[in-house]
Image (cartoon, rainbow, N blue to C red; front, side, top):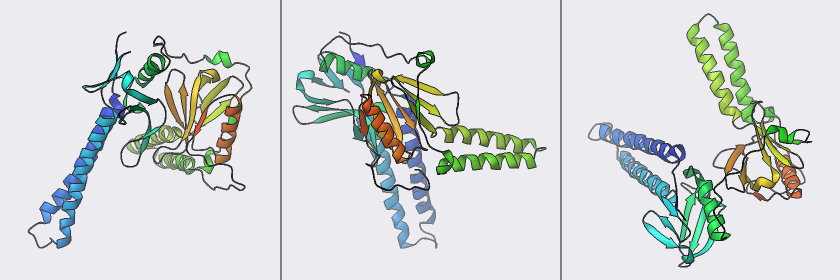
Length: 323
């Protein structure tokens, strides 16, 4: 059986790491440059030696980020006999436990969805989903060949056509944009840009600035404005503002749905299909009560839910704004 090789994601791995290192380099230049500029002058004080501590911390942060990216995004080769991380090879007979789903520690107290392989020696090998462009292929191979011991099914699940859901009765799980600070900020920016453009309608530069700002703000904030629909056979993802967008899933194609809150984002829903393809949908407008109802209704239809962020039912719930 031919081997499967990992492919690092060009954006999530290389470009993201580049900008992280650029940030640390900028901070280090600021700290080091300020120290050098002040040293030996009348402006220099004893407390300025703290800049050297900051510089050391920033260099350590840069090194730490690189180490974590390459540790949790190693080059991987796997076939029916072994899995290889970089140049170190492990026989599948050396593996004690495989966890294809779950959050794994990343950098600076963040966690990402990933795979954990525990060896019989007690050591653990991990890799994160979003650091690869072919994570689904890797996980399908492990599931099919290693866990289920059957031929590798390399095909991915085809999304259903919209006509398949024609006539379905969908229930909406959504909120109101104006109960969420992102929604308020979005439409406040749009109103301000329209007003500024109207006042300065004869100034081309200002009109272009207002148009670009309005468009960028609209699409950037709309990314968080997803909501969901559920029928007896389908799960659908829609968007409050991008009305033409719709992602449709057959319920029997879904392996797991995860309620999660990554980093400082609002609550999100992640759909993982049986071919291990995964997609995250931020849904800033949904209140906890709506999330709980969605969870209950999905579970009634046999969908597995992993709830990582929504609290259990409380007798009284009031929020002026959603997260």
